[in-house]
Image 1 (cartoon, rainbow over the protein chains, first blue to last red):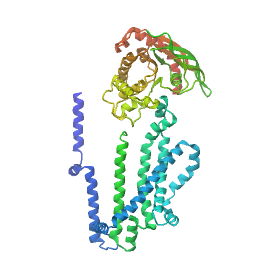
Image 2 (cartoon, rainbow over the protein chains, first blue to last red; image 1 turned 90 degrees about the vertical axis):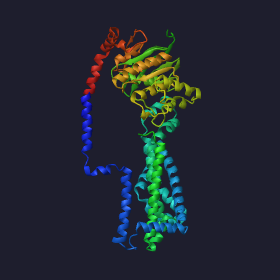
Image 3 (cartoon, one colour; image 1 turned 45 degrees about the vertical axis):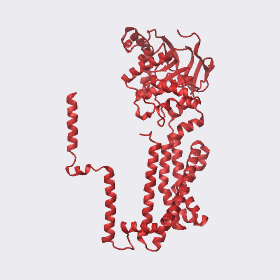
Image 4 (cartoon, rainbow over the protein chains, first blue to last red; image 1 turned 180 degrees about the horizontal axis):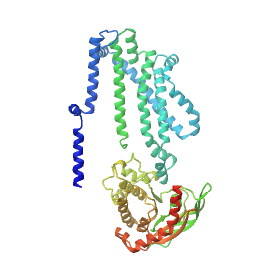
Length: 275
Length: 261
């Protein structure tokens, strides 16, 4: 027993010693440290490149210039107006698509007929780059908010439908049998077993929808809008104003990262029972 | 002493799946407070029998009567303890144990307190707010048992509940089950493939045979209670295990050979 223990300890020690001497100081940095360093380093390289290598304002903007552009937009009172326009388009479309997607997913999982009727359309439209319909929606619905909302719904609803249905279909049979044994009705089986066990799938679909929804907002705005982050970008592009163009892109990136992180937090709270 | 009125009556029960006869005409009775184990080779229909009693499966002909009423579907007069614990991973241990009363619509505060006491009885006091993934296999099977008891059933149906546990945990769980059973003396039907487990726990052992599945013989276990684990080493215990094993050895061999083929 003692012998075994000491062997185990010494082999552990050997494992530690085997790590490359050169990398050891860096091993102290946590993963967050590495990621943060990577981002800061990347921006530093970008700054250097745009100041000394491609010092052409019509071609590339430095991060410092982008920050200035954002501040300038904010001071002119335009930034919040554009962000508010895009945000309301995104939120309306995303919420509508989430509710509709979950309901349609539930319908498909519970009705064979509905599944057979709708499945070809859903599969087909999910595989189609429906973003190409943006000009059409603007022709139909005008350059106001409704064309953007419809674009977001079109992009977000399909992954939500497909994931909801898949999650409901993979309900563990033995859990269904367990609640049936306690006399559960169809409704109770659905509410107490099928729906909770499908939640991780539904969340995955909603998460996919965030990126797709943001793309929908911006692309629809590029094709024609009164306000929005997409409009910042298209106006900047028309005026060859690179700092402002990048400002729009950075705002989108921050929105995407922020929404995904917030979603991850929510997921952790609601699905804490998972491993 | 146990009452004379039968708790459970099995009356001409047969079960057919397509062309195969899973259970062939079973007639028997179980008295209130009796602990019955069902053993037999795989494919003898012992689990099917238990599922028909639970109402999860329907008999092809004949019927099962619990306290005189024919069983047609699952109900809160029967508590089922599953082979796999089948706990809902998103519910706490307390909420898992309360799932029966919740579904049945009788989850009163008194019932919650009673369930709390049951969790204590099965040795899980202090784990009420834990989640299933935080518990070991043995502890999860204790929840499985408490969940079945939480509806205060007339009869407890147990389908090889200890088969997924390691040998030592299983022995402990057997003594624990007897201790808990002594508290309330529920009527129990306990399906197992472990003959020594059946002898250790039961008042009577139903030995099932296969092709077709049928009740071959009933063995009375007249060992005194309470039974310590050491009883498993007494000649009387070993003789009973040996007798049952002799009854089913031929069929078990046949079923093993079939699985190999």
